Image (cartoon, rainbow, N blue to C red; front, side):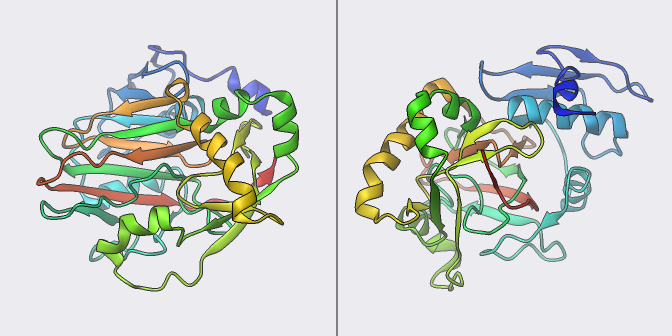
Length: 297
């Protein structure tokens, strides 16, 4: 089936999906016009049918991030669910929990001031093959605060003028794991552990490998400059692009409760965990799914 045909089968907002081999009713509730949907009616700890997994995947491609609430998942169940969509891979800088090397704790303790990854970013663009997707599961959350913002990089690209889009389509950007913006946010977790000089250069305009859509692939956390340009030359244009990416027109906000799970398409969106809950503990489990090398759009 080609991409155009596949899109005809994407679930509409609020649609009750019943065309599965076993009755599993999934409600997809859209959050904003450009990004985010809440999927209800499933227990992710159970073995889901292939048809149900396909419906979730289609909702992910349409909405870029999908959320589930009121789940009660062990690390084993979380791993099993993630593996239905791709290959779980270790995170480059933080060890997984005991017995589950691909399940990483994202933790902020009450005395800590920095939160892990507290900058707008996509995951691991400093790798030659960045993560395809990721899941984050809420174990313990603060009473107030600790929400996460998500932004649609496809609609961010579509907001560009044709002239700027044409210029950007010819550029590549350097992405560095140790850029100061993101490095500060993880020092309390990895200390001075070397990151093996993790850098990669990718197209500024990336082609989504499943939908064929074009998207803007730079991030405040990791992009340092355009290839063959200095940081000083690159910064003004990059700052302009960052402002477009984080515009309210392209974002949604998710309020965590214990048992919530976010599943995002790391190729199509970025996220920003807010750091507004000092004095409280926040514990999440995170899994990355292996991806492929970005193609120019």
